[in-house]
Image (cartoon, rainbow, N blue to C red):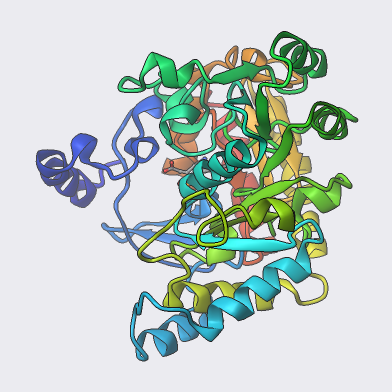
Length: 427
Ligand code: KE4
Protein backbone atom coordinates (compact mmCIF):
# COMPACT_ATOMS: atom_id res chain seq x y z
CA UNK A 1 0.00 0.00 0.00
CA UNK A 2 1.74 3.20 -1.07
CA UNK A 3 0.68 5.92 1.31
CA UNK A 4 3.29 8.44 0.26
CA UNK A 5 1.88 11.17 2.47
CA UNK A 6 2.24 9.06 5.62
CA UNK A 7 5.70 7.94 4.59
CA UNK A 8 6.87 11.54 4.14
CA UNK A 9 5.34 12.58 7.48
CA UNK A 10 6.94 9.62 9.21
CA UNK A 11 10.33 10.54 7.81
CA UNK A 12 9.99 13.98 9.36
CA UNK A 13 8.56 12.58 12.58
CA UNK A 14 11.48 10.20 13.07
CA UNK A 15 13.86 13.15 12.90
CA UNK A 16 12.22 14.82 15.88
CA UNK A 17 10.28 12.18 17.84
CA UNK A 18 11.82 8.86 19.00
CA UNK A 19 10.56 6.20 16.60
CA UNK A 20 8.40 8.91 15.04
CA UNK A 21 5.61 8.22 17.52
CA UNK A 22 4.41 9.46 20.88
CA UNK A 23 3.51 5.98 22.04
CA UNK A 24 5.53 2.93 20.95
CA UNK A 25 2.75 0.59 19.87
CA UNK A 26 1.69 3.11 17.20
CA UNK A 27 4.94 2.52 15.34
CA UNK A 28 3.72 -0.67 13.62
CA UNK A 29 7.04 -2.27 14.61
CA UNK A 30 5.68 -5.75 15.26
CA UNK A 31 3.58 -5.86 12.08
CA UNK A 32 6.18 -4.26 9.83
CA UNK A 33 5.48 -1.44 7.43
CA UNK A 34 4.95 2.10 8.65
CA UNK A 35 2.08 3.76 10.49
CA UNK A 36 -0.81 5.37 8.66
CA UNK A 37 -1.07 9.04 9.54
CA UNK A 38 -4.68 9.92 10.32
CA UNK A 39 -6.23 13.19 9.11
CA UNK A 40 -9.72 12.81 10.55
CA UNK A 41 -12.24 10.27 11.81
CA UNK A 42 -16.02 9.92 12.02
CA UNK A 43 -18.20 7.13 13.34
CA UNK A 44 -16.40 3.82 12.65
CA UNK A 45 -14.19 5.42 10.01
CA UNK A 46 -10.64 6.72 9.98
CA UNK A 47 -9.36 8.80 7.07
CA UNK A 48 -5.64 8.56 6.35
CA UNK A 49 -3.50 11.54 5.40
CA UNK A 50 -3.66 10.35 1.79
CA UNK A 51 -7.44 10.24 1.84
CA UNK A 52 -7.85 6.49 2.16
CA UNK A 53 -10.63 5.33 4.53
CA UNK A 54 -10.47 2.49 7.03
CA UNK A 55 -12.92 0.79 9.32
CA UNK A 56 -11.37 1.39 12.73
CA UNK A 57 -11.00 -1.39 15.32
CA UNK A 58 -8.43 0.44 17.45
CA UNK A 59 -10.80 3.19 18.56
CA UNK A 60 -7.85 5.14 19.99
CA UNK A 61 -7.07 1.97 22.04
CA UNK A 62 -10.49 1.93 23.64
CA UNK A 63 -11.89 5.43 24.30
CA UNK A 64 -14.04 5.79 21.17
CA UNK A 65 -16.93 3.56 22.24
CA UNK A 66 -19.48 5.99 20.75
CA UNK A 67 -17.53 6.13 17.50
CA UNK A 68 -15.37 9.03 16.34
CA UNK A 69 -16.48 12.69 16.41
CA UNK A 70 -19.83 11.95 18.04
CA UNK A 71 -21.83 15.21 17.72
CA UNK A 72 -22.83 15.27 21.40
CA UNK A 73 -19.22 14.92 22.53
CA UNK A 74 -17.86 17.44 20.03
CA UNK A 75 -20.51 19.98 21.02
CA UNK A 76 -19.77 19.49 24.72
CA UNK A 77 -16.05 20.06 24.11
CA UNK A 78 -16.65 23.18 21.99
CA UNK A 79 -19.02 24.71 24.55
CA UNK A 80 -16.72 23.94 27.48
CA UNK A 81 -13.60 25.22 25.73
CA UNK A 82 -15.29 28.56 25.03
CA UNK A 83 -15.56 29.01 28.82
CA UNK A 84 -11.84 28.44 29.34
CA UNK A 85 -9.74 25.31 28.90
CA UNK A 86 -8.34 24.95 32.41
CA UNK A 87 -8.60 26.79 35.71
CA UNK A 88 -6.64 24.69 38.21
CA UNK A 89 -9.56 25.18 40.55
CA UNK A 90 -12.62 23.09 41.43
CA UNK A 91 -15.58 23.15 39.04
CA UNK A 92 -19.20 21.99 39.24
CA UNK A 93 -18.57 19.64 36.33
CA UNK A 94 -16.03 17.64 38.39
CA UNK A 95 -18.69 17.18 41.05
CA UNK A 96 -21.23 16.06 38.45
CA UNK A 97 -18.68 13.65 36.93
CA UNK A 98 -17.70 12.20 40.33
CA UNK A 99 -21.38 11.74 41.21
CA UNK A 100 -21.98 10.07 37.83
CA UNK A 101 -19.12 7.59 38.27
CA UNK A 102 -19.93 6.76 41.87
CA UNK A 103 -23.63 6.28 41.11
CA UNK A 104 -22.77 3.84 38.31
CA UNK A 105 -20.30 1.66 40.27
CA UNK A 106 -21.43 0.67 43.80
CA UNK A 107 -17.83 -0.13 44.82
CA UNK A 108 -16.83 3.45 44.01
CA UNK A 109 -17.67 5.27 47.24
CA UNK A 110 -15.20 8.06 46.44
CA UNK A 111 -13.16 8.91 43.34
CA UNK A 112 -10.16 11.05 42.36
CA UNK A 113 -9.83 12.29 38.78
CA UNK A 114 -6.53 12.35 36.90
CA UNK A 115 -5.33 12.48 33.29
CA UNK A 116 -4.24 8.99 32.26
CA UNK A 117 -4.63 5.33 33.07
CA UNK A 118 -0.97 5.24 34.07
CA UNK A 119 -1.59 7.91 36.69
CA UNK A 120 -4.72 6.16 37.91
CA UNK A 121 -2.97 2.79 38.37
CA UNK A 122 0.22 4.29 39.83
CA UNK A 123 -1.78 6.38 42.29
CA UNK A 124 -4.15 3.56 43.27
CA UNK A 125 -1.22 1.33 44.17
CA UNK A 126 0.59 4.07 46.08
CA UNK A 127 -2.65 4.52 48.00
CA UNK A 128 -2.88 0.77 48.63
CA UNK A 129 0.68 0.78 50.01
CA UNK A 130 -0.08 3.82 52.15
CA UNK A 131 -3.32 2.33 53.48
CA UNK A 132 -1.88 -1.11 54.29
CA UNK A 133 1.62 -0.04 55.29
CA UNK A 134 2.89 -2.83 53.05
CA UNK A 135 5.31 -2.53 50.09
CA UNK A 136 4.72 -5.42 47.67
CA UNK A 137 2.18 -5.52 44.83
CA UNK A 138 1.14 -8.47 42.68
CA UNK A 139 0.46 -8.12 38.95
CA UNK A 140 0.01 -10.67 36.18
CA UNK A 141 2.38 -11.37 33.30
CA UNK A 142 1.04 -9.82 30.13
CA UNK A 143 -1.20 -7.36 31.94
CA UNK A 144 -0.44 -3.69 31.38
CA UNK A 145 -1.29 -0.97 33.86
CA UNK A 146 0.59 1.95 32.32
CA UNK A 147 4.26 2.82 32.40
CA UNK A 148 4.97 3.62 36.05
CA UNK A 149 8.37 2.11 36.91
CA UNK A 150 7.13 -0.60 39.23
CA UNK A 151 4.42 -1.70 36.79
CA UNK A 152 6.78 -2.24 33.87
CA UNK A 153 7.47 -5.74 35.08
CA UNK A 154 6.39 -8.49 32.66
CA UNK A 155 4.04 -5.90 31.19
CA UNK A 156 1.76 -6.40 28.23
CA UNK A 157 0.66 -4.06 25.44
CA UNK A 158 3.55 -2.14 23.87
CA UNK A 159 6.09 -3.74 26.21
CA UNK A 160 5.05 -7.23 25.11
CA UNK A 161 4.69 -6.07 21.52
CA UNK A 162 8.28 -4.87 21.48
CA UNK A 163 9.43 -7.95 23.33
CA UNK A 164 10.64 -5.93 26.32
CA UNK A 165 8.26 -7.00 29.06
CA UNK A 166 10.75 -5.54 31.54
CA UNK A 167 11.87 -2.00 30.66
CA UNK A 168 15.36 -0.55 30.83
CA UNK A 169 15.64 2.25 33.36
CA UNK A 170 13.62 0.53 36.07
CA UNK A 171 15.82 0.05 39.15
CA UNK A 172 16.10 -3.58 40.22
CA UNK A 173 15.06 -2.59 43.74
CA UNK A 174 11.88 -1.08 42.33
CA UNK A 175 11.08 -4.12 40.17
CA UNK A 176 11.75 -6.39 43.15
CA UNK A 177 8.72 -4.95 44.95
CA UNK A 178 6.46 -6.19 42.15
CA UNK A 179 5.60 -9.88 42.28
CA UNK A 180 4.12 -11.58 39.25
CA UNK A 181 1.93 -14.59 38.58
CA UNK A 182 0.21 -15.95 35.50
CA UNK A 183 -3.30 -14.69 34.75
CA UNK A 184 -5.90 -17.35 35.59
CA UNK A 185 -3.46 -19.10 37.95
CA UNK A 186 -5.07 -18.76 41.38
CA UNK A 187 -2.72 -21.28 43.07
CA UNK A 188 0.18 -19.15 41.89
CA UNK A 189 -1.25 -16.16 43.75
CA UNK A 190 -1.94 -18.24 46.84
CA UNK A 191 1.73 -19.27 46.79
CA UNK A 192 2.81 -15.62 46.72
CA UNK A 193 0.66 -14.80 49.74
CA UNK A 194 2.19 -17.79 51.57
CA UNK A 195 5.73 -16.77 50.59
CA UNK A 196 5.24 -13.12 51.56
CA UNK A 197 2.92 -13.15 54.57
CA UNK A 198 1.57 -9.73 55.61
CA UNK A 199 3.75 -7.98 52.98
CA UNK A 200 1.47 -7.71 49.94
CA UNK A 201 -0.35 -4.39 49.75
CA UNK A 202 -2.46 -5.16 46.69
CA UNK A 203 -3.18 -7.42 43.77
CA UNK A 204 -3.94 -5.55 40.55
CA UNK A 205 -5.42 -7.12 37.46
CA UNK A 206 -7.21 -6.35 34.25
CA UNK A 207 -10.50 -8.26 34.80
CA UNK A 208 -10.63 -9.15 31.11
CA UNK A 209 -7.12 -8.78 29.78
CA UNK A 210 -6.76 -6.68 26.66
CA UNK A 211 -3.01 -6.17 26.77
CA UNK A 212 -1.90 -9.61 25.70
CA UNK A 213 -4.82 -9.81 23.31
CA UNK A 214 -8.30 -10.47 24.71
CA UNK A 215 -8.02 -13.06 27.49
CA UNK A 216 -11.14 -13.65 29.61
CA UNK A 217 -10.94 -14.75 33.24
CA UNK A 218 -11.62 -18.44 33.90
CA UNK A 219 -14.75 -19.01 35.99
CA UNK A 220 -14.01 -18.19 39.61
CA UNK A 221 -10.59 -16.65 39.03
CA UNK A 222 -11.50 -13.04 39.79
CA UNK A 223 -13.77 -13.99 42.67
CA UNK A 224 -10.91 -16.13 44.03
CA UNK A 225 -8.50 -13.19 43.80
CA UNK A 226 -10.95 -11.01 45.70
CA UNK A 227 -11.32 -13.64 48.43
CA UNK A 228 -7.53 -14.11 48.72
CA UNK A 229 -7.03 -10.37 49.12
CA UNK A 230 -9.69 -10.20 51.82
CA UNK A 231 -8.20 -13.21 53.64
CA UNK A 232 -4.70 -11.73 53.61
CA UNK A 233 -5.45 -8.05 54.27
CA UNK A 234 -4.40 -6.92 50.78
CA UNK A 235 -6.43 -4.60 48.58
CA UNK A 236 -8.07 -5.97 45.42
CA UNK A 237 -7.43 -3.41 42.66
CA UNK A 238 -9.38 -3.85 39.45
CA UNK A 239 -7.84 -2.07 36.49
CA UNK A 240 -10.93 -1.17 34.45
CA UNK A 241 -9.18 1.43 32.32
CA UNK A 242 -10.05 -0.68 29.28
CA UNK A 243 -13.18 -2.53 30.49
CA UNK A 244 -14.87 0.26 32.45
CA UNK A 245 -18.13 1.38 30.78
CA UNK A 246 -17.12 -0.77 27.77
CA UNK A 247 -18.24 -4.17 29.05
CA UNK A 248 -21.39 -2.71 30.55
CA UNK A 249 -22.59 0.27 32.55
CA UNK A 250 -21.08 -1.38 35.62
CA UNK A 251 -18.01 -2.62 33.73
CA UNK A 252 -16.36 -5.96 34.39
CA UNK A 253 -17.04 -5.70 38.13
CA UNK A 254 -20.75 -5.75 37.34
CA UNK A 255 -20.35 -8.52 34.78
CA UNK A 256 -18.50 -10.78 37.24
CA UNK A 257 -20.19 -9.70 40.48
CA UNK A 258 -17.10 -8.20 42.10
CA UNK A 259 -16.63 -5.50 44.72
CA UNK A 260 -13.00 -4.41 44.39
CA UNK A 261 -11.42 -2.24 47.06
CA UNK A 262 -10.13 0.13 44.36
CA UNK A 263 -10.95 0.52 40.66
CA UNK A 264 -9.05 2.41 37.99
CA UNK A 265 -10.86 3.94 35.02
CA UNK A 266 -9.80 5.75 31.85
CA UNK A 267 -10.26 5.62 28.07
CA UNK A 268 -14.06 5.47 27.58
CA UNK A 269 -14.85 7.74 30.55
CA UNK A 270 -12.97 10.60 28.89
CA UNK A 271 -14.59 10.17 25.47
CA UNK A 272 -11.21 10.60 23.79
CA UNK A 273 -9.96 13.37 26.05
CA UNK A 274 -7.21 12.88 28.69
CA UNK A 275 -9.41 11.96 31.65
CA UNK A 276 -9.01 9.00 34.02
CA UNK A 277 -9.96 8.19 37.59
CA UNK A 278 -9.37 5.87 40.50
CA UNK A 279 -11.66 5.23 43.42
CA UNK A 280 -13.24 2.79 45.80
CA UNK A 281 -13.65 2.31 49.54
CA UNK A 282 -14.20 5.57 51.41
CA UNK A 283 -11.85 4.56 54.26
CA UNK A 284 -9.09 3.92 51.73
CA UNK A 285 -9.70 7.01 49.59
CA UNK A 286 -9.65 9.27 52.64
CA UNK A 287 -5.97 8.46 53.03
CA UNK A 288 -5.36 10.64 49.96
CA UNK A 289 -3.98 14.17 50.31
CA UNK A 290 -5.20 16.63 51.40
CA UNK A 291 -7.33 14.43 53.72
CA UNK A 292 -4.57 11.92 54.46
CA UNK A 293 -0.86 11.21 54.11
CA UNK A 294 -0.77 9.67 50.59
CA UNK A 295 0.20 12.35 48.10
CA UNK A 296 -1.29 12.50 44.59
CA UNK A 297 -1.79 15.52 42.33
CA UNK A 298 -2.15 16.78 38.74
CA UNK A 299 -2.21 20.15 36.99
CA UNK A 300 -4.97 19.11 34.61
CA UNK A 301 -6.75 16.59 36.81
CA UNK A 302 -10.53 16.92 36.33
CA UNK A 303 -10.00 19.39 33.49
CA UNK A 304 -13.25 21.20 32.58
CA UNK A 305 -13.09 20.36 28.87
CA UNK A 306 -12.31 16.70 29.59
CA UNK A 307 -15.10 16.32 32.13
CA UNK A 308 -17.50 17.85 29.61
CA UNK A 309 -16.49 15.21 27.07
CA UNK A 310 -16.74 12.51 29.72
CA UNK A 311 -20.19 13.56 30.90
CA UNK A 312 -21.48 13.71 27.32
CA UNK A 313 -20.07 10.24 26.65
CA UNK A 314 -21.55 8.70 29.78
CA UNK A 315 -24.89 10.36 29.02
CA UNK A 316 -25.05 8.61 25.64
CA UNK A 317 -23.86 5.29 27.08
CA UNK A 318 -26.57 5.39 29.74
CA UNK A 319 -29.26 5.20 27.06
CA UNK A 320 -31.30 1.96 26.97
CA UNK A 321 -30.07 -0.73 24.56
CA UNK A 322 -26.46 0.50 24.39
CA UNK A 323 -24.78 -2.67 25.59
CA UNK A 324 -27.23 -4.97 23.86
CA UNK A 325 -26.24 -3.30 20.58
CA UNK A 326 -22.53 -3.67 21.33
CA UNK A 327 -23.04 -7.35 22.20
CA UNK A 328 -25.03 -8.01 19.01
CA UNK A 329 -22.30 -6.42 16.89
CA UNK A 330 -19.65 -8.41 18.75
CA UNK A 331 -21.51 -11.67 18.27
CA UNK A 332 -21.90 -11.01 14.53
CA UNK A 333 -18.23 -10.14 14.15
CA UNK A 334 -17.12 -13.17 16.16
CA UNK A 335 -19.30 -15.60 14.21
CA UNK A 336 -18.25 -14.13 10.88
CA UNK A 337 -14.56 -14.10 11.74
CA UNK A 338 -14.77 -17.67 12.96
CA UNK A 339 -16.34 -18.74 9.68
CA UNK A 340 -13.82 -16.72 7.65
CA UNK A 341 -10.87 -18.16 9.58
CA UNK A 342 -11.69 -21.53 8.08
CA UNK A 343 -9.89 -20.25 4.98
CA UNK A 344 -6.67 -19.77 6.94
CA UNK A 345 -3.80 -22.24 6.70
CA UNK A 346 -2.72 -21.30 10.23
CA UNK A 347 -4.46 -22.21 13.50
CA UNK A 348 -6.72 -19.34 14.60
CA UNK A 349 -8.34 -18.74 17.99
CA UNK A 350 -10.87 -15.92 18.37
CA UNK A 351 -11.59 -14.71 21.92
CA UNK A 352 -14.15 -12.03 22.79
CA UNK A 353 -15.88 -10.39 25.71
CA UNK A 354 -18.47 -7.86 24.63
CA UNK A 355 -16.91 -5.23 22.38
CA UNK A 356 -13.28 -6.28 22.87
CA UNK A 357 -11.85 -9.23 20.95
CA UNK A 358 -8.70 -10.68 19.42
CA UNK A 359 -7.81 -12.97 16.49
CA UNK A 360 -4.93 -15.08 17.84
CA UNK A 361 -2.79 -17.02 15.38
CA UNK A 362 -2.29 -20.00 17.65
CA UNK A 363 -4.17 -23.02 18.94
CA UNK A 364 -6.43 -21.99 21.79
CA UNK A 365 -7.51 -21.39 24.35
CA UNK A 366 -5.29 -18.46 25.34
CA UNK A 367 -5.59 -18.17 29.11
CA UNK A 368 -2.30 -16.54 30.14
CA UNK A 369 0.78 -14.77 28.83
CA UNK A 370 2.80 -17.98 28.22
CA UNK A 371 -0.04 -19.20 25.99
CA UNK A 372 -0.47 -15.81 24.27
CA UNK A 373 3.28 -15.60 23.65
CA UNK A 374 3.09 -18.78 21.54
CA UNK A 375 1.04 -16.93 18.92
CA UNK A 376 2.54 -16.63 15.44
CA UNK A 377 3.21 -12.88 15.29
CA UNK A 378 4.40 -13.15 11.70
CA UNK A 379 1.10 -14.67 10.66
CA UNK A 380 -0.67 -11.89 12.54
CA UNK A 381 1.49 -9.34 10.70
CA UNK A 382 0.44 -10.80 7.33
CA UNK A 383 -3.21 -10.73 8.39
CA UNK A 384 -2.89 -7.15 9.65
CA UNK A 385 -1.27 -5.99 6.40
CA UNK A 386 -3.93 -7.68 4.27
CA UNK A 387 -6.77 -6.21 6.33
CA UNK A 388 -5.19 -2.75 6.16
CA UNK A 389 -4.88 -3.02 2.38
CA UNK A 390 -8.54 -4.04 2.27
CA UNK A 391 -9.57 -1.01 4.34
CA UNK A 392 -9.77 -2.45 7.86
CA UNK A 393 -7.54 -0.93 10.55
CA UNK A 394 -6.68 -3.46 13.27
CA UNK A 395 -4.38 -2.77 16.23
CA UNK A 396 -0.79 -3.21 14.96
CA UNK A 397 0.05 -5.96 17.45
CA UNK A 398 -1.03 -9.50 18.18
CA UNK A 399 -0.97 -8.51 21.85
CA UNK A 400 -3.71 -5.90 21.75
CA UNK A 401 -7.50 -6.10 21.69
CA UNK A 402 -9.73 -4.98 18.85
CA UNK A 403 -12.52 -2.63 19.87
CA UNK A 404 -15.77 -1.98 18.06
CA UNK A 405 -18.08 0.92 18.80
CA UNK A 406 -21.76 1.81 18.71
CA UNK A 407 -21.05 3.35 15.31
CA UNK A 408 -20.08 -0.04 13.77
CA UNK A 409 -23.35 -0.87 12.00
CA UNK A 410 -24.34 -3.85 9.85
CA UNK A 411 -22.65 -2.36 6.81
CA UNK A 412 -19.37 -1.98 8.73
CA UNK A 413 -19.60 -5.57 9.94
CA UNK A 414 -20.22 -6.90 6.45
CA UNK A 415 -17.34 -4.90 4.97
CA UNK A 416 -15.08 -6.19 7.74
CA UNK A 417 -16.04 -9.81 7.18
CA UNK A 418 -15.61 -9.49 3.41
CA UNK A 419 -12.09 -8.24 4.03
CA UNK A 420 -11.41 -10.98 6.58
CA UNK A 421 -12.47 -13.73 4.17
CA UNK A 422 -9.86 -12.49 1.71
CA UNK A 423 -7.21 -11.71 4.31
CA UNK A 424 -7.33 -15.08 6.05
CA UNK A 425 -6.65 -16.82 2.76
CA UNK A 426 -3.49 -14.72 2.37
CA UNK A 427 -1.97 -15.52 5.76
P1 KE4 B 1 -2.72 5.29 29.67
O1 KE4 B 1 -1.65 5.83 30.59
O2 KE4 B 1 -2.14 4.83 28.32
O3 KE4 B 1 -3.89 6.24 29.53
O4 KE4 B 1 -3.37 3.98 30.35
C1 KE4 B 1 -2.55 2.92 30.75
C2 KE4 B 1 -3.39 1.66 30.80
C3 KE4 B 1 -3.78 1.17 32.03
N1 KE4 B 1 -4.54 0.06 32.13
C4 KE4 B 1 -4.95 -0.61 31.04
C5 KE4 B 1 -5.79 -1.84 31.19
C6 KE4 B 1 -4.57 -0.16 29.74
O5 KE4 B 1 -4.98 -0.85 28.65
C7 KE4 B 1 -3.78 1.00 29.62
C8 KE4 B 1 -3.31 1.52 28.28
N2 KE4 B 1 -3.58 0.68 27.15
C9 KE4 B 1 -2.70 0.81 26.03
C10 KE4 B 1 -3.15 -0.10 24.89
N3 KE4 B 1 -3.47 -1.40 25.28
C11 KE4 B 1 -2.60 2.23 25.55
C12 KE4 B 1 -2.04 2.41 24.17
C13 KE4 B 1 -0.67 2.97 24.18
O6 KE4 B 1 0.12 2.64 25.10
O7 KE4 B 1 -0.39 3.74 23.23
